[in-house]
Length: 387
Figure 1 (cartoon, helix red, strand yellow):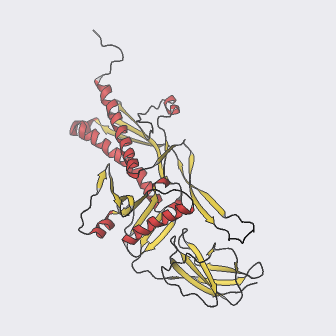
Figure 2: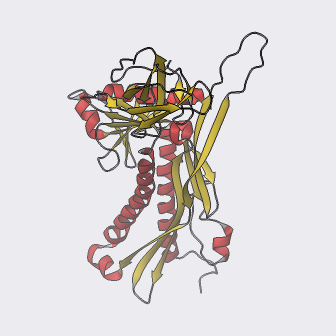
Figure 3: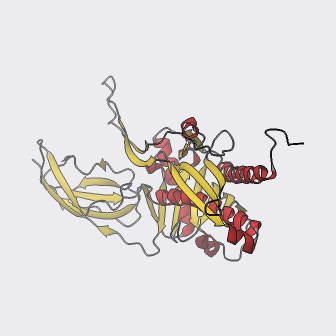
């Protein structure tokens, strides 16, 4: 008697089970990363969407006297294109000879594992590269201070933007951690290729990265609320209508996987598609702290010329700011200010690098380039020439 129609055969179970296992493991890895971080917003986008990161600033207007009209403070959010999110396509094939030589578990299953790892690494490496472009730059003399000040910088930035930063995650070179700890015993957790420490020195999580992912002597920090996962759904109905039906898993479909046997070449083919990008919504909400064990104050060349309005001077400074997250501060007085490396100049007036400054001819103006924590990095002065 013939088998009933639609009976699931052994070959069907093998292929289907392999597809299910692959997408389930991939989804589990990313869910675990979300669990480690605490928060990571998954947002579904369509192919061709341009992702935009942001920078935010607020320039406070001067306070006024009793009864006077209160001026507005200038708040600015600038969007910057980060990347296109497109469908990425990958394929792998294992020959029948390889299966015969090494067996199915080695030739197919282990290469599936490697395939899975490479897909995951493709996304995380791009994320780590992006983190290294953070705009909140900090310079410290040792690793412990770099950890502390990187966290402080992002909390301060988010408070300025009136946004919540409940948990801050850090990214460090694993060798820096062991160098700092020496022989101390510490619990390092490893899950799905992610090495991390929970609740370390005020951070909710510290990720341990390799030299390829973050250089030694660098600490990166950002609030978890700043991390976004954009993705394209491989189960999109338009793909299926085009005859491209991929196995997916869960409500947030991050990867599609399909397996088939190619009889014309006698190989087992695997196809994966995904469109995933991890990035930070606010690029100036990422602090990058580097260690400089022998810091010295850099030199700015400051010039002064008559400004546009009476009583104003036009200031020029060279070289340009070393990092876009740095700020200019200035002070006008009868003599030039003495500035030391790392001096806190938070209370000095802020200069945007282009506007005229009100100052009397003959006075001395001292300009400081400070990092995100308002520590002096470079300084210079000039005698004022005003209109």
